[in-house]
Image 1 (cartoon, helix red, strand yellow):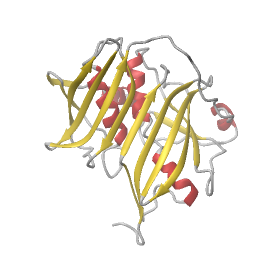
Image 2 (image 1 turned 180 degrees about the vertical axis):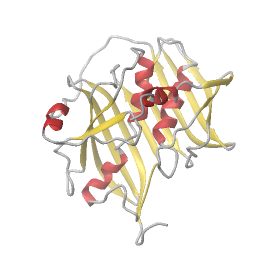
Image 3 (image 1 turned 180 degrees about the horizontal axis):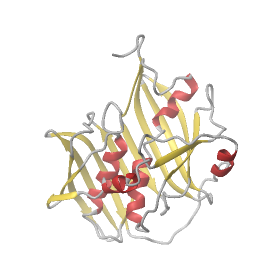
Length: 275
Protein backbone atom coordinates (compact mmCIF):
# COMPACT_ATOMS: atom_id res chain seq x y z
CA UNK A 1 0.00 0.00 0.00
CA UNK A 2 1.29 3.46 -0.83
CA UNK A 3 2.24 5.51 2.27
CA UNK A 4 -0.14 8.30 1.25
CA UNK A 5 -3.08 6.03 0.30
CA UNK A 6 -5.11 6.98 3.37
CA UNK A 7 -4.47 10.69 2.81
CA UNK A 8 -5.60 10.28 -0.79
CA UNK A 9 -8.83 8.63 0.34
CA UNK A 10 -9.55 11.27 2.99
CA UNK A 11 -8.86 13.91 0.35
CA UNK A 12 -11.73 12.58 -1.76
CA UNK A 13 -14.13 14.22 0.68
CA UNK A 14 -12.34 17.59 0.72
CA UNK A 15 -14.62 19.10 -1.91
CA UNK A 16 -13.92 22.27 -3.86
CA UNK A 17 -16.61 24.96 -3.37
CA UNK A 18 -17.65 26.31 -6.77
CA UNK A 19 -20.55 28.51 -5.75
CA UNK A 20 -23.04 28.62 -2.90
CA UNK A 21 -24.37 25.05 -2.44
CA UNK A 22 -22.27 23.81 -5.37
CA UNK A 23 -19.17 21.63 -4.92
CA UNK A 24 -16.77 19.54 -6.99
CA UNK A 25 -14.99 16.34 -5.96
CA UNK A 26 -12.28 14.36 -7.69
CA UNK A 27 -12.83 10.70 -8.53
CA UNK A 28 -11.06 7.48 -7.69
CA UNK A 29 -10.51 4.52 -10.02
CA UNK A 30 -10.75 1.18 -8.20
CA UNK A 31 -10.58 -0.83 -11.41
CA UNK A 32 -14.33 -1.40 -11.45
CA UNK A 33 -16.45 -1.03 -14.62
CA UNK A 34 -17.88 2.22 -13.26
CA UNK A 35 -17.37 4.77 -10.50
CA UNK A 36 -17.56 3.17 -7.05
CA UNK A 37 -20.90 4.03 -5.46
CA UNK A 38 -19.37 4.58 -2.03
CA UNK A 39 -17.47 7.55 -3.42
CA UNK A 40 -20.56 9.49 -4.47
CA UNK A 41 -22.33 8.51 -1.24
CA UNK A 42 -19.51 9.90 0.89
CA UNK A 43 -18.95 12.99 -1.25
CA UNK A 44 -22.68 13.79 -1.31
CA UNK A 45 -22.73 13.63 2.49
CA UNK A 46 -19.64 15.84 2.64
CA UNK A 47 -21.27 18.42 0.35
CA UNK A 48 -24.47 18.50 2.41
CA UNK A 49 -22.55 18.68 5.69
CA UNK A 50 -20.89 21.91 4.55
CA UNK A 51 -24.29 23.61 4.39
CA UNK A 52 -25.39 22.93 8.01
CA UNK A 53 -23.93 23.95 11.41
CA UNK A 54 -21.20 21.52 12.58
CA UNK A 55 -23.24 20.53 15.66
CA UNK A 56 -25.91 18.99 13.43
CA UNK A 57 -24.90 15.51 12.39
CA UNK A 58 -26.40 13.36 9.69
CA UNK A 59 -28.57 10.55 11.04
CA UNK A 60 -29.89 9.15 7.75
CA UNK A 61 -29.13 9.15 4.04
CA UNK A 62 -31.25 7.70 1.21
CA UNK A 63 -30.06 7.74 -2.38
CA UNK A 64 -30.59 6.35 -5.89
CA UNK A 65 -27.91 5.52 -8.44
CA UNK A 66 -29.18 6.74 -11.83
CA UNK A 67 -26.31 6.25 -14.27
CA UNK A 68 -22.87 4.64 -14.19
CA UNK A 69 -20.27 7.21 -13.17
CA UNK A 70 -16.93 7.75 -14.89
CA UNK A 71 -14.03 7.16 -12.45
CA UNK A 72 -11.75 9.37 -14.57
CA UNK A 73 -13.88 12.52 -14.33
CA UNK A 74 -14.71 14.78 -11.35
CA UNK A 75 -18.22 14.91 -9.93
CA UNK A 76 -20.20 18.10 -9.25
CA UNK A 77 -22.60 18.14 -6.29
CA UNK A 78 -25.57 20.48 -6.13
CA UNK A 79 -27.12 20.85 -2.67
CA UNK A 80 -30.68 22.06 -2.07
CA UNK A 81 -31.60 23.28 1.40
CA UNK A 82 -35.03 21.65 1.75
CA UNK A 83 -35.62 22.56 5.39
CA UNK A 84 -33.88 24.06 8.42
CA UNK A 85 -35.92 23.41 11.55
CA UNK A 86 -35.37 23.84 15.26
CA UNK A 87 -33.49 20.57 15.67
CA UNK A 88 -33.51 18.93 12.20
CA UNK A 89 -32.27 19.99 8.77
CA UNK A 90 -32.89 18.26 5.43
CA UNK A 91 -30.77 18.46 2.30
CA UNK A 92 -31.24 17.08 -1.22
CA UNK A 93 -28.05 16.43 -3.20
CA UNK A 94 -27.60 15.73 -6.92
CA UNK A 95 -24.33 14.34 -8.27
CA UNK A 96 -23.61 15.41 -11.86
CA UNK A 97 -21.18 14.26 -14.56
CA UNK A 98 -21.20 15.40 -18.19
CA UNK A 99 -24.19 17.61 -17.44
CA UNK A 100 -26.40 14.72 -16.33
CA UNK A 101 -27.34 13.46 -12.87
CA UNK A 102 -25.71 10.13 -11.99
CA UNK A 103 -26.99 9.99 -8.39
CA UNK A 104 -29.26 11.85 -6.03
CA UNK A 105 -30.01 11.51 -2.35
CA UNK A 106 -31.62 13.14 0.65
CA UNK A 107 -29.98 13.33 4.04
CA UNK A 108 -31.32 14.53 7.38
CA UNK A 109 -29.30 16.19 10.15
CA UNK A 110 -30.19 16.29 13.84
CA UNK A 111 -28.90 18.15 16.87
CA UNK A 112 -27.66 15.67 19.53
CA UNK A 113 -30.34 14.74 22.08
CA UNK A 114 -30.77 12.28 24.94
CA UNK A 115 -33.56 9.68 24.70
CA UNK A 116 -34.67 6.09 25.18
CA UNK A 117 -31.99 3.62 24.09
CA UNK A 118 -31.99 0.04 22.80
CA UNK A 119 -30.17 -1.92 20.09
CA UNK A 120 -29.86 -5.34 18.52
CA UNK A 121 -27.21 -7.57 20.08
CA UNK A 122 -24.00 -8.03 18.13
CA UNK A 123 -23.69 -11.61 16.83
CA UNK A 124 -21.09 -13.90 18.35
CA UNK A 125 -18.17 -13.87 15.91
CA UNK A 126 -14.46 -14.56 15.92
CA UNK A 127 -12.32 -11.52 16.69
CA UNK A 128 -10.18 -10.13 13.84
CA UNK A 129 -7.01 -10.92 15.77
CA UNK A 130 -8.06 -14.56 16.19
CA UNK A 131 -8.99 -14.81 12.51
CA UNK A 132 -5.53 -13.59 11.55
CA UNK A 133 -3.88 -15.99 14.00
CA UNK A 134 -5.93 -18.82 12.43
CA UNK A 135 -4.61 -17.95 8.97
CA UNK A 136 -7.37 -15.74 7.54
CA UNK A 137 -6.05 -13.54 4.77
CA UNK A 138 -6.49 -9.79 4.73
CA UNK A 139 -8.11 -8.54 1.51
CA UNK A 140 -7.86 -5.08 -0.03
CA UNK A 141 -7.75 -3.32 -3.37
CA UNK A 142 -4.25 -2.51 -4.65
CA UNK A 143 -2.83 0.59 -2.94
CA UNK A 144 -6.04 1.06 -0.96
CA UNK A 145 -6.18 1.64 2.81
CA UNK A 146 -9.34 -0.38 3.59
CA UNK A 147 -8.72 -3.97 4.58
CA UNK A 148 -11.28 -6.75 5.06
CA UNK A 149 -11.45 -10.01 7.00
CA UNK A 150 -14.26 -12.44 6.23
CA UNK A 151 -15.63 -14.17 9.33
CA UNK A 152 -15.56 -17.96 9.14
CA UNK A 153 -19.31 -18.19 9.64
CA UNK A 154 -20.02 -16.89 6.12
CA UNK A 155 -22.26 -19.28 4.19
CA UNK A 156 -20.84 -20.28 0.78
CA UNK A 157 -24.18 -21.59 -0.52
CA UNK A 158 -27.69 -22.10 0.74
CA UNK A 159 -29.58 -20.25 3.44
CA UNK A 160 -29.26 -18.01 5.29
CA UNK A 161 -27.92 -15.56 2.76
CA UNK A 162 -25.46 -13.93 5.15
CA UNK A 163 -21.98 -12.43 5.06
CA UNK A 164 -19.99 -11.10 8.00
CA UNK A 165 -16.91 -9.01 7.31
CA UNK A 166 -14.55 -7.10 9.57
CA UNK A 167 -13.13 -3.92 8.01
CA UNK A 168 -10.97 -0.96 8.99
CA UNK A 169 -8.94 1.90 7.53
CA UNK A 170 -5.21 1.35 7.99
CA UNK A 171 -3.36 4.43 9.25
CA UNK A 172 -3.84 7.39 11.54
CA UNK A 173 -6.99 9.47 11.16
CA UNK A 174 -7.93 12.75 12.85
CA UNK A 175 -10.48 12.75 15.66
CA UNK A 176 -12.95 14.76 13.54
CA UNK A 177 -16.30 12.83 13.65
CA UNK A 178 -17.30 14.18 10.21
CA UNK A 179 -14.23 12.54 8.65
CA UNK A 180 -15.14 9.18 10.18
CA UNK A 181 -18.79 9.47 9.11
CA UNK A 182 -17.73 10.21 5.54
CA UNK A 183 -15.37 7.23 5.48
CA UNK A 184 -18.00 5.00 7.09
CA UNK A 185 -20.46 6.04 4.37
CA UNK A 186 -17.87 5.25 1.72
CA UNK A 187 -17.07 1.86 3.28
CA UNK A 188 -20.72 0.85 3.70
CA UNK A 189 -20.98 0.13 -0.04
CA UNK A 190 -18.30 -2.57 0.01
CA UNK A 191 -19.51 -6.21 0.20
CA UNK A 192 -23.17 -5.27 0.70
CA UNK A 193 -24.84 -6.20 -2.59
CA UNK A 194 -22.69 -9.29 -3.16
CA UNK A 195 -24.35 -10.82 -0.08
CA UNK A 196 -27.32 -11.54 -2.39
CA UNK A 197 -25.03 -13.87 -4.40
CA UNK A 198 -24.19 -16.08 -1.41
CA UNK A 199 -27.12 -18.55 -1.62
CA UNK A 200 -26.45 -19.11 -5.33
CA UNK A 201 -22.74 -19.85 -5.04
CA UNK A 202 -21.88 -17.15 -7.58
CA UNK A 203 -18.70 -15.08 -7.27
CA UNK A 204 -18.55 -11.35 -7.93
CA UNK A 205 -16.04 -11.88 -10.74
CA UNK A 206 -18.23 -14.34 -12.69
CA UNK A 207 -18.06 -13.25 -16.34
CA UNK A 208 -21.80 -13.93 -16.81
CA UNK A 209 -22.76 -11.58 -13.99
CA UNK A 210 -24.16 -8.08 -14.39
CA UNK A 211 -24.47 -6.39 -11.01
CA UNK A 212 -25.00 -2.77 -9.97
CA UNK A 213 -26.39 -0.85 -6.99
CA UNK A 214 -29.80 0.75 -7.55
CA UNK A 215 -30.20 2.52 -4.23
CA UNK A 216 -28.55 2.83 -0.83
CA UNK A 217 -29.83 3.82 2.61
CA UNK A 218 -27.72 4.42 5.69
CA UNK A 219 -28.68 5.32 9.25
CA UNK A 220 -26.05 6.66 11.66
CA UNK A 221 -26.70 5.70 15.28
CA UNK A 222 -23.56 6.98 16.98
CA UNK A 223 -20.03 8.15 16.24
CA UNK A 224 -17.32 5.56 15.71
CA UNK A 225 -13.76 5.38 14.50
CA UNK A 226 -13.17 3.63 11.19
CA UNK A 227 -9.45 3.14 11.88
CA UNK A 228 -10.35 0.34 14.29
CA UNK A 229 -12.05 -2.92 13.32
CA UNK A 230 -15.80 -2.73 12.61
CA UNK A 231 -18.05 -5.73 11.96
CA UNK A 232 -20.41 -5.57 8.96
CA UNK A 233 -23.18 -8.14 9.47
CA UNK A 234 -25.16 -8.45 6.21
CA UNK A 235 -28.07 -10.57 5.08
CA UNK A 236 -30.24 -10.79 1.97
CA UNK A 237 -33.88 -11.59 2.80
CA UNK A 238 -35.06 -11.60 -0.83
CA UNK A 239 -33.89 -11.88 -4.41
CA UNK A 240 -35.89 -12.08 -7.64
CA UNK A 241 -36.87 -10.33 -10.87
CA UNK A 242 -33.17 -9.56 -11.50
CA UNK A 243 -32.92 -7.66 -8.22
CA UNK A 244 -31.64 -8.42 -4.75
CA UNK A 245 -32.31 -6.77 -1.38
CA UNK A 246 -29.62 -6.66 1.30
CA UNK A 247 -29.56 -5.30 4.86
CA UNK A 248 -26.54 -4.52 7.01
CA UNK A 249 -25.66 -3.75 10.62
CA UNK A 250 -22.29 -2.23 11.53
CA UNK A 251 -20.90 -2.81 15.05
CA UNK A 252 -17.73 -1.64 16.74
CA UNK A 253 -15.60 -4.23 18.49
CA UNK A 254 -17.29 -3.39 21.82
CA UNK A 255 -20.63 -4.54 20.39
CA UNK A 256 -22.19 -1.10 19.92
CA UNK A 257 -24.45 -0.79 16.87
CA UNK A 258 -23.13 2.29 15.11
CA UNK A 259 -24.98 2.20 11.77
CA UNK A 260 -27.56 0.29 9.72
CA UNK A 261 -27.81 0.02 5.95
CA UNK A 262 -30.05 -1.32 3.21
CA UNK A 263 -29.53 -1.65 -0.52
CA UNK A 264 -31.33 -3.03 -3.55
CA UNK A 265 -29.33 -3.87 -6.64
CA UNK A 266 -29.57 -5.14 -10.17
CA UNK A 267 -28.41 -8.78 -10.46
CA UNK A 268 -28.53 -10.41 -13.89
CA UNK A 269 -26.94 -13.74 -14.72
CA UNK A 270 -26.52 -14.05 -18.48
CA UNK A 271 -26.32 -17.35 -20.36
CA UNK A 272 -22.94 -16.45 -21.84
CA UNK A 273 -19.96 -14.48 -20.54
CA UNK A 274 -20.33 -10.74 -21.05
CA UNK A 275 -17.88 -9.11 -23.43
